[in-house]
Image (cartoon, rainbow, N blue to C red; front, side):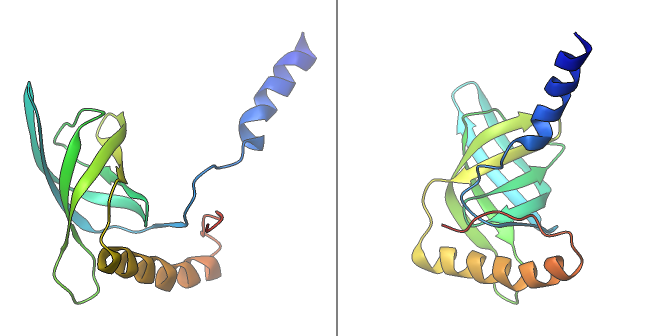
Length: 135
């Protein structure tokens, strides 16, 4: 029985991250709006991580999993905030939630990717880089 418990404890650390894009830990201001028939969603927050496929956000404004949001992301790159019209809420836990971008214009994808790649180098030097496979 003891051996079974120990092998079960090892399994989570052996899981591979199945994300398809690099992500960086970076804090940027974000605002969002969205609506489902029973509850409008509107709020502000901060990103916890960023990738070309989505964001993890912390906010005191509640959202519901499955909601489609319009997101305004203020990347600190000297350009106006990005407006992403198709951010699908895929995970919610308390004040934290994650969105997956369903559609990005080529310019938006390029801008986010440039930002991520610029900051991967800095994170890798600090050994805080999350190591995922770019596909």
